[in-house]
Length: 212
Image (cartoon, rainbow, N blue to C red; front, side, top):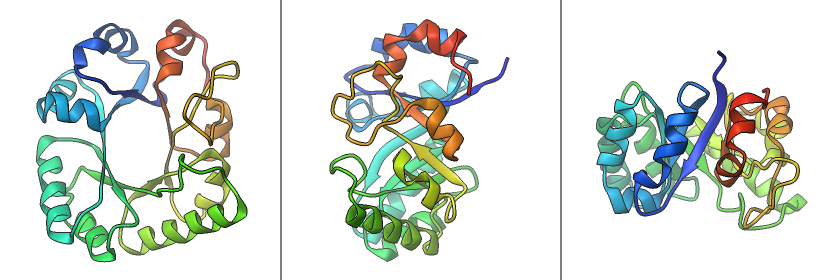
């Protein structure tokens, strides 16, 4: 059985809300993305629980602070056993370097552009994202969170591209502005994709029928 390159995005007050989906998805998808709300509600134990279940854990905290705080936070996340951690590229260059230098041997740092989903994609926004991604690369960041529309440019900079805003063809876009289907993002060059509502609403299809 091939494991699909998908992170299931979970958030809310308790990991117990997702017990059914987590059991069904085991062995079918790559990992779990833990949002800030869930991490604050459950605390570090949510990472430990998921790791004990055998999941790759993507901790989506979007660090944005002074270099010292970013350094110590990155160390703490690495000690928890998380596999991926997000940081705002708009952080000071020194903060990006501190994260890259203090991630340990297994944690990978993913840069985030504030233009990712909050603004409609225009030429100027695309140029802004590309500039930020190049800066992140120079600072030793491992990969980036990248909208599907920017993958073709970004894969010239990074091999590790994680694409959110993934919807099945007939799904609602909800609060995402830059959306794409799973196959489009993977075919463009994303290494992993992030899906939330679309998984919960189409669980059987994701497990049995979606081919990537």
